[in-house]
Length: 175
Image 1 (cartoon, one colour):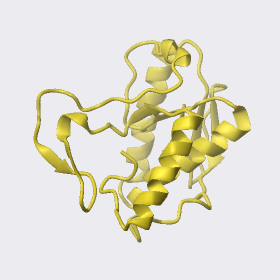
Image 2 (spheres, helix red, strand yellow):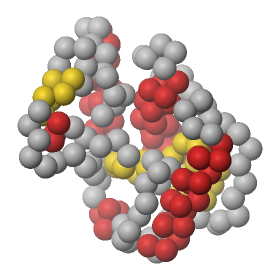
Image 3 (cartoon, one colour):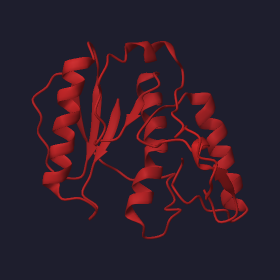
Image 4 (cartoon, one colour):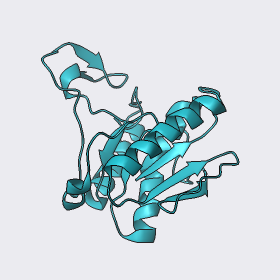
């Protein structure tokens, strides 16, 4: 797993740490074996051999597509950091938001090379996902938990470059 625990003016440090601690407790309870890399922009110490703390960085390919919107830029950056992790470890890391709580062992995901969760349900209301494209709400991908593989990453980067070239801006980062 990997995630960001960064102060960007959206939550307080205490709020971030509260969510992170709940996530870690759920991982310790339900996931038998895991490695969790947390990127942070403040001094963070955690005594847990499953967890590695790294300094957060804005990847050189994250060209700040969203101007001064720190949250959207931070969120888009997870795609590029996924690629760095893949290059370093040759495995497909799972993105997990800090405010996610695990209720079951997730080892079965090791056998899947990618995994995404749609909002689902029956809602067929159309929602804006870019400045000129709509999608049924039930088909929008949740951003809190996903597993990408390197082939999908490469296709996604081609798509993002095409969107950028055509001045199409995604409303909610990479979702």
